[in-house]
Image (cartoon, rainbow, N blue to C red; front, side):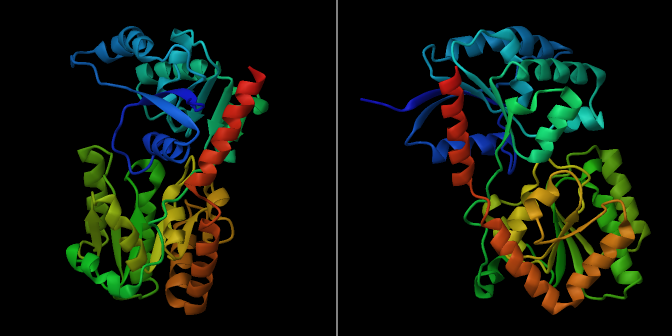
Length: 369
């Protein structure tokens, strides 16, 4: 007899993300496999690439497909993708409803078109129909209460975890990765996109100060991650690098296999991440787990993740960013302190804890339904 919970899991589009909603689902399902069976319902792109058809597909066609794929007598419905919470407006589910919200960045930064913003607000209206909303940080919960006026008691923060392969690796096992990617002997690492809120241009400017103002020679800057911006915006970044005379000192690796990333963190002298806004911020956590000193922002959710295990600065203060980077790179005692604290802080976050907290929310919602 199967006593496992049955969960209709609405996943959204699988973008093959290193971070993001699909990974949250995978790790949750993986760690709850002995307690729950997840009926996966992914989002599939419409077949016709014509104006507004995607909107028609979302509102009229996809909900009908979801209805057909639902297990009618499931114990729970969990919408893991905030883009698909509009379904809670379109479908009458016969079970308690849970929605996961990573962040409301598109609403705060208004980087979308008017049409997509309207649809985002429609999705938010659906999210409000959930019996419980899971956020990935206290800061995202605060945003939902402040911007969307959702009652605090409806929202439960559940931190993300860090994969076990992000760990300190002995130097003799790192040579192959250094050679594979032709990595410099000494480098500062940034992992992420080049979207404006990621503030990568400040990393470039601070790195320039290290070389010119602090006369720190021999260190390079390595950037890992897809750009996720248009060609014109990326050209502006390359023009900045060229204008500052850094063309030979900044290395771009737009994509690397996820299994190679822990080694790259281990090889770095410093990890820098001055993002303006993060729903959680996995890269600093991964860096800390690998024993790499971290300099990051004092904004959004990042203080929750990093605690006192890294150096936090105002992300808009390039001089403060450069000064902190210089301190870490030139002070061996500080490096050792940050490494030890970072490893300890990272142990507080695991996907097992994420799943356990999610399970408690499942139980709570079922008991109250």
